[in-house]
Length: 215
Image (tube, rainbow, N blue to C red; front, top):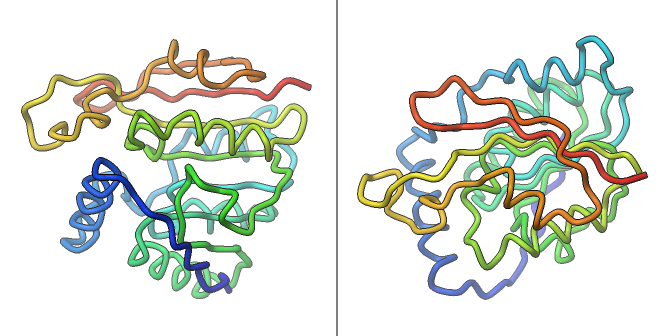
């Protein structure tokens, strides 16, 4: 059973409010494009494939309705999961409970982990298009929060959208249009090594990034 969410009283700036409202709208309509209900093969390979990581402690950033947090828990991981949208966190708790697995679920901001009960250390961080939606001025805080909680040699598996031109419904928010690039991750994630970049199969530029915390 997932824990009840912690209620942070964070004051968001105008750009953060725009992102929050946009994310809420996706869940209100029931059509968040990143929440397919299917665990991506890239995560399955990391957990079950050749050279798979041994089960340890995992933190999912932007857990959505809990598909991947539940998957990790089913495979022996001790899982904490965070989502900014309370509606998503509610659905994630229901999914974990239905699966009969233990996941520590929290409603909160992935760029303000100090406000949540997720002290770490974690061996695995998973991010399915959370970071690429974070306003640019909050991304250093995101990286610092993970770095502070990373065990030596920890992995970060991140899916992100590449830069897109402004002017269409999915990139009307500046930070979303900026997307994420390998160069940005190398610059922001000091003390980590970017060990793999694999293009996604989407119709727009997407990438799977794998980073490893220095030992």
